[in-house]
Image (cartoon, rainbow, N blue to C red):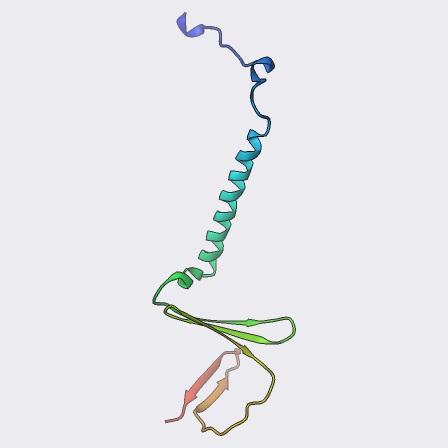
Length: 113
């Protein structure tokens, strides 16, 4: 019979000293955990963890709404960003090779020997 003791439930009068906004702090913590989880998922999905590696080499090409392009390269710890403009290049140079576009849309570069 000792297991059938009456349990005491909290009454509204017992909760007078508690702050009603304590639950809001828990929601804020939950939101932070959710945001960190989303960031980790995005990094894993797009394989962006190489951005933090000291020895990785990455090239990212961004195309903006106005048609300009930006090339971001990362070699080891050095990051360099270049904007590509529509101006024609001037100067002298020599031929390096030929680029071909295949039927499926991929491009192949064949250097001259």
